[in-house]
Length: 229
Image 1 (spheres, one colour):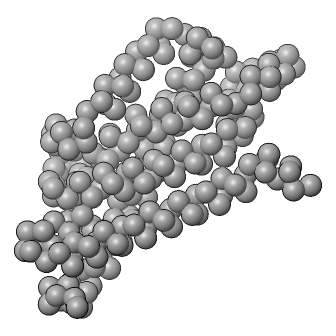
Image 2: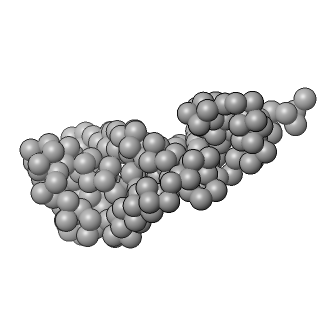
């Protein structure tokens, strides 16, 4: 049996609103994090000592910055970035501020995921492109990114699930969504069914993201398509 609190939240539309806010924060934060993290990951890859354009000092500086932000636990990073969120969006509470924090936390993670995916590209393919006089920009655009597409999509799925987890933690300092409902109406008011409902709904969202993402990655994998012929 569901508690009176859960039924009230459902009737008021707060559960559905929480689902939408969770999806909205996760999706928008993921897009912005990839706008920042994708080029960072590409630069980290191509400036590496084994990259197509090694630049030690640039790779070292970017690597240190990325590792610095990745090493900070998200709950601490949120508190530290409150002034930054206020500077960017004019407020330190609410979804807009939480999205700023999610992007700051996720962008370095995305950069490393992208770098790792690009390193999986066969060196022979890159060397073949270089032997034909292809410049570095064309190699990135026409060789590295297309060849790494399945791995990049898989990495995007993992990143989105990570950001979804971050969004739940953001409820501790003013974020909304299922995390806020679980904390405010479940844990703090001793309604475990509300908490478990939010857990169940979050798991469903994660499964949808994973299934859709893995299906897309499977369809874009040339090795899989080639084995069918």
